[in-house]
Length: 90
Image 1 (cartoon, rainbow, N blue to C red):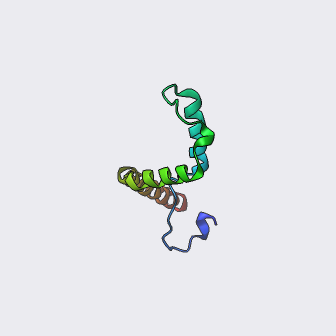
Image 2: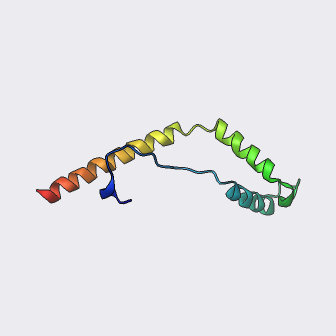
């Protein structure tokens, strides 16, 4: 759907997604490069471990400042877009 197709209904946009496969890749990288992590191998970390960790991080992470900043920047960009559209039609 293009911007021109927008019917005026408010929509939501995903700003951040925590993907468990990205966490698994990071685990392998951390274990390979961090000498302090001498415990389990990357293969010993289960999908259930990763899922539980992701849920815990999501539960205790506060992104309200980042959300507020994104809303502010989107509002400014929308105002600039309206100004450009108005200048182009004048």
